[in-house]
Structures are given as C-alpha cells and as structure tokens.
Image 1 (tube, rainbow, N blue to C red):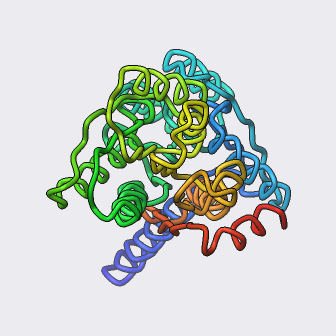
Image 2: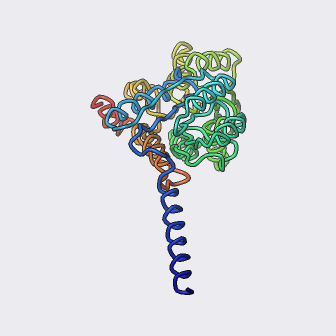
Length: 320
C-alpha cells in the first residue's frame, strides 16, 4: 500500500513540475496564434524617431506570425495613455512603449500590469524601471560624452558653451545634459553660459539660437542633444555670419545631420545604431510574448562621426 501511495505522489509531483515548466516557457495559450505587439511612439515628427520606426517596420516585414500596430502620441501623455488603454482592450500580447514623459509612466504600467500585458520600453525609460520587462536604448550618456569631448578638443579646451537640450524630463535630455556638463567641468578654461530646451525640434533650435545671438551672448560652442536642433542652430548662426566663429555638435547621425557635417557646417555627430535598436525592440517583444527570458537592459554603444569618417555613415543610409 505504501508503495502505491508513493508512486501516486511521485506522479502528481512530476505532473506539477511539468505544468510549472510549461507556464514559464510560454505565457500564451495558443502558440500558433499571431503575436500582437502594440507600439506606442511619443512623437513621429521627431526625425530620429521617424527613422527608428521606419527601420522597425522594414524589419517587421521579415517576421512571421507577428502583427504590429503603431500609434503616435504626438508628445501628449494623455493621448499615449488612451492609446495604451486601447491596446489593452485589444488584448495585445506585448506593449512596446517609447514614453512621452518618463514621469508620467506609472499610470501606463499600472494599467498594463493589471491586464497582465508586459512592457518593453525603448528610447526613453519608465519612471520605475521595475515596471518594464526590458528596456532598449543606445547609451545615452555616452553619446553626450563623445559629442562634448570632441567639441572641447576642436576649440582647444577653451571657450563658452551653450547647451540646446531635448524635451525636459526625457531620459535622453537628462543623461546627455549630465554628460555635457561633466565634460565641460573638467576643463578650467571652459564654462557653460546658456542652456535651454528646444524640444528636439529644428525650428525651435533655430529660434533659440537667434535669441542668443541677438542678445549678444558670447558663445564659442553649441552642444546640441540631437541633429535636428543642431541644424536649426546652424541655420541661425549662418544667417548671422558667424559660421566660422561658433562650433556646433549634434547627436543621432541622421541623413540631414550627415549632410551638414559633410559640408563642413556641423563639427560632429554621434551614431546611436538606429537599425540594431529597432530590431532589438521587436526581437525582445517577441521573446517576452513567448515567455522567453530577456535581458533587463539592452543598450547599444555609440560611434563618433567626424569629417574623417562621415562617408561610411552616409553610405549606410544610402544602402537601405
């Protein structure tokens, strides 16, 4: 009798362990069903983000059994929340979210987690990193360090620096600003004389630079936190006839940014590997949907681009 009871208990334990393993390897009830991914973008009018999403859509064409829907919040946190709620009601398997504002993400994660829908964040983090399964981005602080170190070298580590910042509160703005300040603080003959946001926008970057020039502010270097704002600043500088007196840097290595660099107007930009980032967002979202383990933080190193190596990066865009 004892032997029979032992065999029964052993069978129950094996069944329990098998069931537990099955649950961990696949959260979906039907593995043949299409994976649904809801991609929430903060602002498709942002040049860098538009390139990232284009790369994502191109890559998605090579994926089987995956359905992806893209929405644009147009820099409105309330709109983004509403879009997330719609995806939840559609019962997507995973949310891929590029937050409008890191400080407004708690309500998004609370609603998604309550519905049992995991989140992969990209190109901007959530306020609480524990709310997301995976975060995909380039090394944002490193991009600011690379840009500012190169700008400092170009002006022989002397001069007044102005920072044109991205949207306040976003991770890219915070980490790049921190990096630029750190570099400037290392050099006794350099100081920051102005810093203001232009919201990742070319026209706003131009207007901001025009205001600084008209006010008579003495500026030798403009460290911009993306190429769009850098191009705007350059347009204002060129119109004022100061192109040979002010050194400007950007980040993102967009086709427009590379054009300005190739033509000797932009001094430096930084390549954040947009193609690999976009692939990683979808690859990790699919793994999460299938119950596979993913790295918590997926970060891509940046590459410094100057006049010496700009042609190879222009070729990258031309070959797409």
